Length: 456
View 1: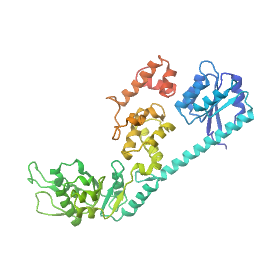
View 2: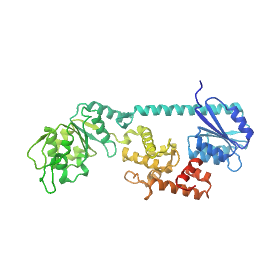
View 3: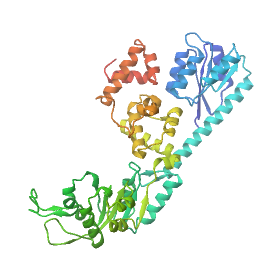
View 4: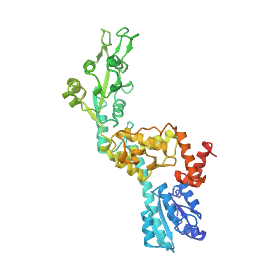
């Protein structure tokens, strides 16, 4: 039993005789062939079917083959486009190749030569399909406790977490802002013997200094102004579980001393109470600061540092694991496509190049925001350069910090989409095919969006 065709070919030629000849000559079991005698219909077929190969005549009424080429390259640069012409010149051939054509053939084309050329492109397309399937399979094997990666740096961290998790009492997780320290802490908890307990999080940089002790250890009624009733602290709440102290480098020195005692003795004293309480808590502390330097500058207690850093897990920055970028891009694209209920196949080659050239100062969090933003903006099924945040499109003007995931202005996603559709229709003077081309979506998709927003 033969399998379904793996590769799709669109043939565009205004001569019906040529279409019939080519489609018959190139027919083979693994190839699905779609023909169009009108270049506009051919472009619509490309948008709709996402073929791997397009064979188009150069000289046609209304739209030239070069214009067809430009629109296809704009839609998806990975599609192989072969131009055919009876008016061959070396200059036009060079121009076609420069604009993205895979080949430029002179009519009349020997059928054997054309079959050979198309067969090579089919083989390459099949290889790409297999590589994508292998990447997908590898992507599944590259997941570890909600983290994604297969680079040596991240696998070393995965291995360390796996070894430490069953035994730790205290762990220090270090790494740059946005690199995934909380995910590492969550993995330590998930693989620990207390995984059925609580995973309690406190961001030390977000707590007012005067309230630190009460947050960690609780207080009794009347301990201070406003203490109207007894309050349990996070240490007690995390009993038989894990307490994660994020950005511990921002903890005041006075609180650090009491934290050290609680960690060493597994005993806490509520503010205003004289009765100590026993707890059984595993502690994971995280920081982006250099705590050794903080100890030298007397901003962090040396005894607490050595207690915490007995076991250390370092989360690598994204620039140290650039080989994980494609996996991470796919991971976030799939997640946001599901979240926004969109059919997003991936990124164009030029968008991927733009992301690969970026140095990612905001690490994984920045990448997540960029892909989330792009997934909101894209109207088609491929994220392209224009869907990325402005600082990614124009790197010279990029801002110092990671991007906001907010839409431009005060638009909601629905308002932004409607505005783009209205603007595209206005620029195309109401021509739906022209508006669909400018938005890089099919005409059916445009009409769906028009109906959704009451424009049809």
